[in-house]
Length: 113
Length: 115
Image 1 (cartoon, each protein chain N blue to C red):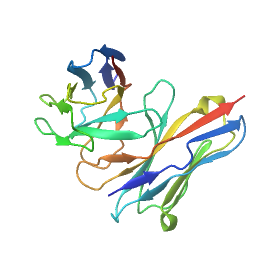
Image 2 (tube, each protein chain N blue to C red):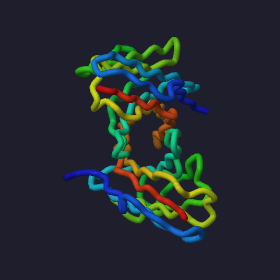
Image 3 (cartoon, each protein chain N blue to C red):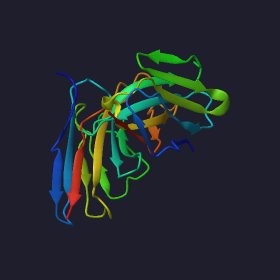
């Protein structure tokens, strides 16, 4: 089945630890995105990538880092510099050729204790 | 800067009622795209519709319909004869016209449909 996978569904970390969230897609999409969602809020863009080895900061990139070494994968690292990392994180992807809709993964709920 | 406003934070209806979710957007672009997504309790966003700024035709898909009015910068979503399974958070989003096509989301409207 084609789709976007994010693992794990729930993640717990201690304050001060870096943590990496996984995002994999087998849709052959070029572009990939990371969003953060807080209760009662819309989605806010963290990072996005159009092609391999290229990525851009979104609206709230501080305290986060990404890599895009493979077309299928776009992992997000939440660093200890992120002041309030507890949130729901969603990964998305789309074909680059037009303004197609973005397809979303199931999300990872990160709780920092 | 782009902005999407969904003024209705939460709407509660009884099954079979019709309900309209409002979306107002701001953009300086002449070409843009608007989207609606549904987020059920499981959390994953489900794409519902995409509309480009040149196409002001209303669209109907089963019990769902969308009203795009460029003059008022609105892209409203109506569910006819609502069902319990329609309970979810609904997001309206606006895409920029750069090659990256990043989305600006509204804060969402939580729809609760009770039996």
